Image (cartoon, rainbow, N blue to C red; front, side, top):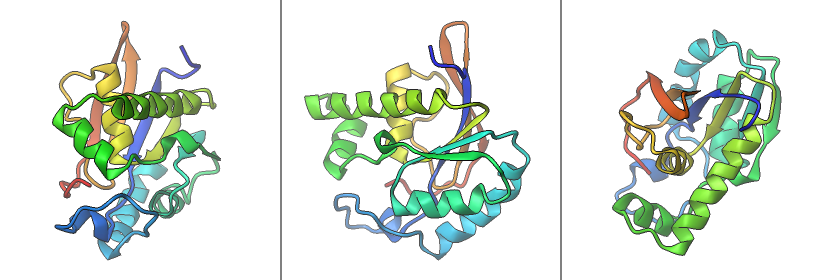
Length: 177
């Protein structure tokens, strides 16, 4: 197992894509006004956490979220490519229960990204995407936790007695996507 047996996970703030009735493949988009507001509202809570490493996806919406929520931390920041979001097709298949090779490859990539993050000095904050959260929860069979996560939601993951557990610390109740 990796060095750390716990981490905090935040999904990026809302984008126009997240609330659009027309779903197309995920692109590298910025936060919308609600997303910026969500990130600023989350920052005081993140400031209280003993974060030593911030690991994140390279996509713009995550970078913008990370820059706001981790602005008061002197933690080291690490870009992890494997934390990049999946395609819209993989998301649709994954969340509807289709387990094709493309879904399995994404889940493996997501777990690899989380494991790379867990090699950093902890406590660790991972800022990424709803698909990464879903894939990790699926792969680890996280019990008693919704695998769908809203924008700028904060979850604490810990590993006890051979099982990962998740504890939501902040809910924003926003549309998935």
